[in-house]
Each structure stands twice: as C-alpha cells, then as structure tokens.
Image 1 (cartoon, rainbow, N blue to C red):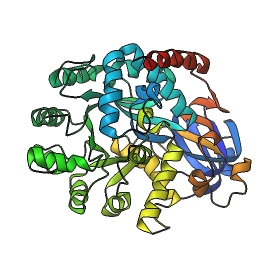
Image 2: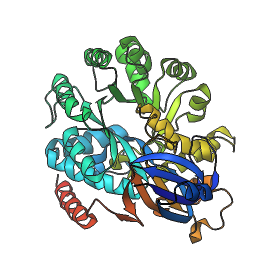
Image 3: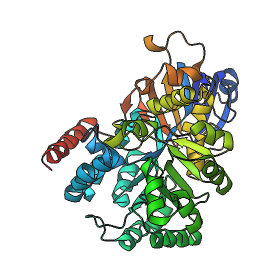
Length: 435
C-alpha cells in the first residue's frame, strides 16, 4: 500500500539540505519518491496520507556503538575511572549474572529506549548475540550484532577461540535476515592477543562482509601501556597485524595523533564517536574535527548505559557538535546538517548499509523519524536542522518507521509492552544490588 508522509520539513541527508513542505512516499517498505507535497498528492491520489504539519522528517538515527544489554547496569558504578569501573564493578557483575535471560531483558529495554529516541539501527558489542537477535526481530528494528572476543573466561566462553566460535556459529542464521548483520567484536588491544587478532583478520579476509568492532585508544594510558608491553602504540600494532581496514569500526579513538588519523584515512577505518562516555569516564575529547577534515568516516554512538546512562542519540550528537566547537575555537565546526549526516549516513556507511539506509532517497528502505518542532521548547523555528540538536530532544520524537512499519505512533510503541519491560528490568536491578 502506498503511503505519503507529508511534513513541514524533510531533511533527506542526500542531498544535505532542508526541503520545505515536502513528502516522502513509501511503498512496500521502500522509499519511492521525495517531492513537494502537492506533487505527491497529485501523483499518488489513492495513497494513504499521514500529515505531519509541524514536524521534521529525518532518516532513522544509526547508533554506531552500544552494549545494549548493559542498559540493566544503568548508573551501577558512576563517577569511577574506567579500569576501576571495569575490574571492580562491571566484570564482577557480569561474571555472576551474564546469561541469555540477562541479555534478552537488557536488549529489550535498550530497544524500547532507542526506538522512543528515534534510533532505528544500532551496532552492538556484547555476548549472546543470538538472543539479542531474537529481541531485535520482535521489535522490528535493524541491528549489527557483535560477538565479543576476550582472552579471559566469562560465563559466555572460556577463551578467545571459544568466543570466536560462538560468534561465527550464528553466521548462517543472520544471513537470512535483511535487517540483521553479524559482527565480531574484539574488546580492545589490551584484552586481545596478537594471535587472536591474526585469527580474526584471517577470518575476515575469508568472509568479505564480516565487520570488526574494537575499542581503541579510549584512555590516555593505553598508548603508554602498549609501548611498555609491545614497544609500539596500539594503532601501529594493529596496523602490523593487518587489522586496520574498511571492515573495522574503531570505537572512541580519543587519543589519536595526526599520523594515526592519516593512517585511518588511508586504510578506510571507520570511527564510532561516543562523547558522553568519553567525558563521563574522564577519557578525554576525541579530535573529531581533525578526523573529519582528514576524510575519516565518523559516526555517532552512545556506548552502553553502564557508562553513558542514556541511549540518546539527540543528546550525543549535540554534545559532539558543542565539544568540537569549544576545543577548536571554531563556531562553525560540525554544523547541524553535518552532525545529522554523522548520526545517520556515516553510521550506515560504517556498517556497510549505506546503500540501504542512512538517507531519505528513492530506492532505500523506509527508515524514518518524525520530530515535532511545534512544542514550547522548539518555538519559533528558524532552522529545523539546528533545532534538532540545539532545541529539540528525544522527547520530541513522535513517529518512527523501520522498513515502512510504524514502530512508534504518537510516542506509543507498537511492538513492545513498556510495563512488562519495566517490571522485568526492576527484577534485574534487585539482583545487581546484591552482587
């Protein structure tokens, strides 16, 4: 059935412009046209029309880095340095509670929060990706789900080979679902050995479409510790091991020097920028302006709720723009439309999904978000693109479509039971309090 979504503004990303009084025409889950509303009504007289008279229609937001199930750890150990946070709080809780039921409950909570925030696609680094995939299917969202790889044992796997085997065991199942993608996600250079990285490179070379995601240079001491152990910085080590390439999504990248940024550009490495987590764990401010100017593809991620507390792409993107303006002394750094591109098409490109999602372009999947710009907080509106980050927030998201399916209708989730999710999440919170 053909649908017309008529909006006050359409911001398609391709082109990177604001179109006034335009409509997006959908058919069978695909965008068939973006054109002025009178023309849409004339060309498709029998289409069902949804009028969004005060809204901006944008592509679905792509959250390029999450640990979705860790939503159940929201605020568990705030105001704690990264290594203390991991070793004394997060890893002990996971050692005791990590299970399929935990991942299922946490991923469901995360999907509900993200859909209500305008996120239609996310990239996840965690365990039990098969369980997470079942949740994602039930919600109607799109996701790239990674099987984590570490050298030490957890309830999920005993060693690196077992982590890799578990991650790859679901390859065939993921291949049958167009809205799911399998990744393998080595945690970080300081938790993964050379031998394991080499195995992953070999596997990735055999599987052309396999994505790798890894935390890299998150904290200032990581390069120094790597130099003590290996004689070189982590990025040089990964370069020698053959890890750097267009199938790698490097997360955080707070402490990159100019030569490392140039190397990322040369190798086609993608970066997932998570400013809230970087600040909250006192990791620093990533040189995003320099990366973008060098030609590195940078997307936006929230990280997990254990570190950033919110799966809020509006807040994350706003913070990204403000930080780069502040540290560069350039008020024009990361302008609103470029920020929208980072939060949508750039993330899709990193996931090798940019031919499918990331912009409102005929032939692409109908993943869209409607943002109400007629509230007290957003009135008057001179520039809807600027308003997305500097006036509006996730509370102004009213409608979300994925593959043309309406998943959020006037702020109401259509595929999820919020009360049941809230109740189950509370039971896990009680368990974690006595870990």
